[in-house]
Image (cartoon, rainbow, N blue to C red; front, side, top):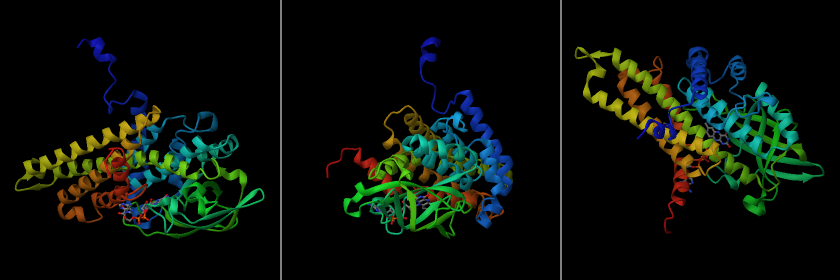
Length: 391
Ligand SMILES: Cc1cc2nc3c(=O)[nH]c(=O)nc-3n(C[C@H](O)[C@H](O)[C@H](O)COP(=O)(O)OP(=O)(O)OC[C@H]3O[C@@H](n4cnc5c(N)ncnc54)[C@H](O)[C@@H]3O)c2cc1C
């Protein structure tokens, strides 16, 4: 092939253009400098210091796709993926705060928000307001559209009543996208999305979960007790909330894939360093072929997962179909992250099992990737649907 013909081919998926490479590097440097020293304390206290959240806003990663004219960074979805990956190398809890803000909340507002809603919320989400996305309930997780939170029209208002469970960012959030049904008899066609501000009468943030992993990320119950919101707070159309939910979660799954490749990279980096330093039988343990092969396999799986995540994100930015790729990248990267972090724990030996070393936390953090934004079984359902199987 001539040089000219080779230059005309698209670059490899992991060969990032200069601006994206610099962006990812700057987010990683921030994470290394500002987040790493706080990771253990945040994990133990299950809290993110407000000062750190303010620094994430200042860095520009809380409003990545918001246009510059509205105070955001004017980036693409792919930049959100890069930011989530870079932050997850250091702390997947901080990464999911950024992930929900960008891939769910801002994403939904950019796609479904009216001009007024965008002008009202986007500058605040870029500057200092955290957002949350409230779909799940105690009785409706995988079967999300069986939700029972009611929205009853009353003049130019809706009255919301019900409870939401497992809502990420709810301790910090100023605005919540809340899914409720205007007509339970209509099934999924009754589901409607609302923008609910934290200080609305009748709205409160309830119990905070005490979790296995991503402990610093807040996960709380929400209580809506006759919470009145203006009709103008409907996001999208009445009865079309299912579409908002499906479409944002399809994209959000790519963000979870990014979280999983980032944390697996973090675990692999720690493990490569440790196995080079730890000596047994007179050698670094990384000199043993069995260990080298395990690390080589981990690196291979991580590379495959990264290609899948980047491919899904690029397809999304190009406006091409990506739902199957998003489901595939989420299940593959979350299972890969569990394997890679588990190997890290094994290769740290006893030190892998204690909190003085970083891999046990990443192992705990990895587990969530197979649960939220659709469990692995639900991803397999999506993938199977696209295989044209006979049933
Ligand atoms: C830390 C954390 C953060 C979260 N953040 C948010 C958030 O910000 N917003 C939000 O709305 N939700 C959030 N969630 C909720 C999350 O999306 C749900 O927990 C998830 O969708 C699974 O629902 P469930 O817990 O009710 O499990 P269930 O739906 O009860 O599933 C239990 C098991 O049954 C399997 N199962 C269920 N149905 C089927 C089926 N048809 N076929 C095969 N297997 C099936 C599942 O795969 C799973 O293994 C969060 C959850 C956690 C733990």
